[in-house]
Length: 214
Image 1: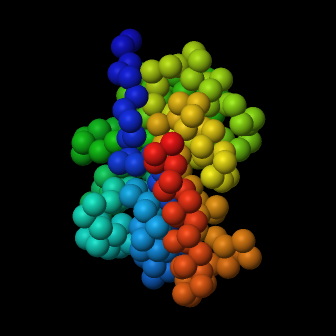
Image 2: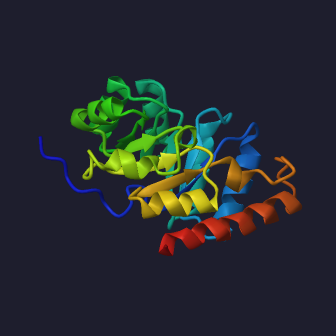
């Protein structure tokens, strides 16, 4: 089987924010704050109440930002996300039905993998790229080590990634990194959506967005 070389980034940016919120209004607010800091791609997890509406709102609001959906577990979830305007779909693990639903709609699918066998199974089945998750469960050189036998597979690193780890994963060949808590939760653990919280997100976004040029 021939596998195409990885693209510069499959999600429209080398860094994308992963939004998981209990309040859809806060989900939109933190996305606005992250975009103000330079983040040009975001994934809205379907654990967020009203995630479809949040996806639709962000797609309408940000014409220059790639919006996707995450924690997609079923084909029905995928259809809901795509109907809302998601331009890519991410799962914590590989699922054939989700892959087929995305393929039917012409939307990229990035399933979660961790082991070499999972990387190969997802890639040969037609996944657009793979999400190596949780990458923080492995050593900091894991992307480099995993790419050694799979140099043409596009790998997205996700899981507990701070700026230093993000820089390392990108240097080791990850086509993108997905950032959740280190971007959207302040050091104090607040998820209030108030002005101080949003300003902290924008500052964190600026630090992560600087990795686009690394």
